[in-house]
Image (cartoon, rainbow, N blue to C red; front, side, top):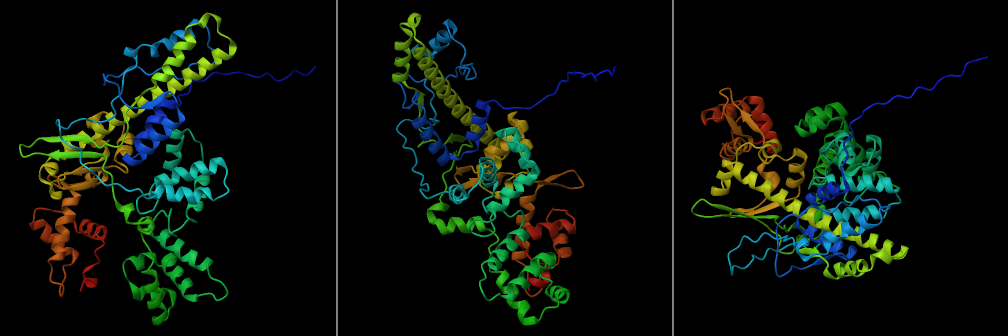
Amino acid sequence: MAQGSRQVQTQAQQQVQTLSPQQILVVKLLELPAVELEDRIHAELLENPALEEGKEDTASDDFSDSPDADNSAEDNGANEYDSLSDYLSEDDIPDYKLQENNRSKGEQAEEIPFSDATSFYETLKEQLGERNLTDHQRELAEYLIGSLDDDGLLRKSLDSICDELAIYAGIECTPEELDEALKIIQDFDPAGLGARNLQECLLIQIHRKIEQQHFTPNPLLYIEEAIISECYEEFTRKHWDKIQQKLGLEEDAFEQAIKEICKLNPRPGASLGEAIGRNMQQIVPDFIVDTYDDGTISLALNNRNVPELRMSRDFTEMVEEHTKNKANQSKESKEAMMFLKQKMDAAQGFIDAVKQRQNTLMTTMQAIIDLQRPFFLEGDESLLRPMILKDVAERTGLDISTISRVSNSKYVQTNYGIYSLKFFFSDGYVTEDGEEMSVREIRKILKECIDNEDKKKPYTDDELTEILKEKGYPIARRTVAKYRQQLNIPVARLRR
């Protein structure tokens, strides 16, 4: 008799990183700039009847523990009603002040203009809404839109975005699926959006023109495509002779093709903002930093249009009415109680998430001020010291990804103007003596040297290296060339 195969069961431990719904809410709120936070709060006020706008006569800034929103709907009996009793006492329903009140008595809040135009993100989402996509494709495309830089280009790798989606949004996907979603965005207007580099941006615009040809093909477009796809490095260095020789082009056709390429837009996202209107260019700062003559620096959140939130008193009274006769509750009444509890849990969780967002923003901005204190006192860009996300993360005790979310799409108003938080981050250059210098400072000095040079005899990179060394910036020639390219300054022979 044949003996059947035996199945062996084994146990294994595996660590999986997951975020609770409350953590996901905090992460999403953290990414929102001031204006979008207002919209998000107003949407929550409309959706959740347990949440209302306004403040009580006695305000409290103390934190209370958030109710557990993960309680099972199957719980019933005394425990169910006892958990609701936390909300029934006025002392247990603190009012969360969501505005930083750092101004003196009688001082008027400064009026800061903001845009009422459609945002860059919303404009792309409108185009996305016109496409016939699955829910999964739409989720991926929306996340990619949110990952675009201000110029409309995508500078994150698809692998890293896959990891972000899995960790912070709980969405599993492959780089291939993301690539398909990215192609959808690259088909949006204006052409060039969603490109991962300048070469791809230009090629998308050229291909769009080729696709839009009707009955008379334009041979010039195919020359443009060949120049960018096959001779991109020579194009960026303006080695025109090498391109003509490599592609075998006539002088007139080549010059005309180059002229048309130079008309393409290297920053399609910026042009979208200009197309929508000038209002689009106005910025609402998330922070207000004031510097005084005695060297003190004050920091406040710009929450003048963000409403204060509290638990709805009417909603609480409804709970009190339901609990008066809990001994004879019907099934329908218990279901109503569960609905009330879920809404109150959600309201409390939202209040806590907004409060946590503001604490995180204030902690991060204060660390940036501490690290860049000379700049905030003087307003001189050359005083900015090298600073990366890790420096702020170590000072605040927060995760690097959290610092990245705070610094993205956030602005600070100072005595010297409004700056993006990204402005304060820059790499450092370490000399042979171990001295750390700001890359921004070196680039500024380099630009000044080139601006003041004799245009009939511009400095070569070797000469610039010697000049910088004399000024106290001993960097290598290849580093000078790299910083010159970052400043979009051509080589000496093209500056004549």
